[in-house]
Structure formats: structure tokens, C-alpha cells
Image: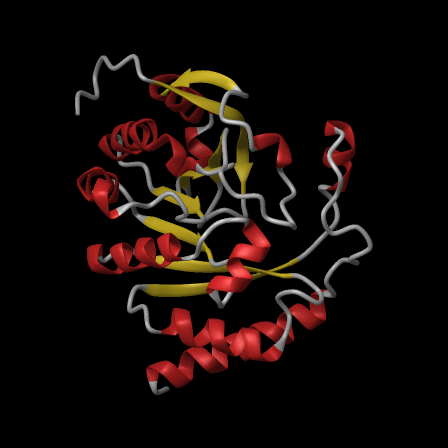
Length: 252
């Protein structure tokens, strides 16, 4: 891939200069536009449509990064969304150029657009990846489909590909009252992700309703109307269940 003079442009929803929750250290966070998922708890419905956002080149985004470079000594760049993998060529170019400057790269993704038929393209992206935050939505194919409107198989194939490539992975899971907080579900999920040798961390994210106002502005019905915020203490207890199941699989 030609990095120096490419005019490839990505559709970008927004950027955050001092992100602290999407990867290690202080990070420049790029929110990609477009997502095929329709997660019931999504708090960024404004990122769904692929044609939205603003067109930017990788060089323009890196110039934004350089303005605050001194703050990113222990951080780097995180691509999130939306779903960054919907714009695979652009994401690959951005991370390729970032790595050429010694910048730590982190991808926050659902893995839903992974296809074995594009394995060569994904391998190129993987060569520039330092860390992946992989959002596991559910522990079963049926639950995944009901929660997101998409099949789970591609997520698992993506996780398998990451393991094969030796890319460190941190699993993220949103705990939604009455949907993803059941003990059996959590044990299944723990056993599912515990088999991945590249699993380096687990983040349990309590469901919140802060995105509801975005649905109202867009004139879209809020899917989880009436579901209350997840209690943070309860979410910590659920994380313990997940960790116990992971240890069972690993024999620790």
C-alpha cells in the first residue's frame, strides 16, 4: 500500500483529543461513521449511516494527533465508531501511517464485518495493530441475533483470526438488566472467551441510558424504553462470574 501520497478518504463522525477509556493511556480517539449493527443498547445511533460524517484523509487525522502529541506518550490512537472495519482500506492506511511514526494503535470493534474471503486484507491491518478491544455482545448465536440483528459467527471468526495473528485482545461486554446479566449467560460467555490465548483483559460496561436523547433528536424509538441503568456494584459482581468461568477454562 502506498502510504505517502494516498488520497483515500474515510467517513469520520468525530474525534476526541484526550480519551482515557478506549485503550491504555491518554489517546486520540477517532469515531468512524457507519455500522451494520443495531444493538438494542447502542448509545451512538448517529454513527449508523455510512454516508454521514465528514470526509478526512489519514494525514489530516494524524495532523490532529500531532497537535497534542506530547499528551500521548503512554497512549496512542484508537479507532472506534460506529464500526471502523466497515472502512477497512482507510483504517489500514491510517494505522499503517501511525505505526510508521511509532504510534500505538488500538481498534475498538465488534468484529462483525470480518470475512475469511478478505483474509489477506485483514492480515495487512493486523500487521499494524497493537491492541484490539473486542465487544462480545452475547454468549449464544440466538441471543446475539436478537440483541444486534447480526449473526455471531463472524465475530468468532474475527476473534480466531486475532488469536492466530497473536494480537492482544481485551474483551468488552455490556451488562444490560434482564438481557445480559443472567448467571448462566455470564458463565457461557466466560467459557467462550476464556479459550482465547491472546485474551489480556476484561472490561464490563454497565448499561446506561445517556444515549436516549440522541434517539429522540433523530426521531427513532428507543429500543430499551423502561430499562433502568445497570447498577455499578452489580456489574462488578457479574464481572467476577465471568472471571471465574474464564479461570475454569484455563485451569487456574
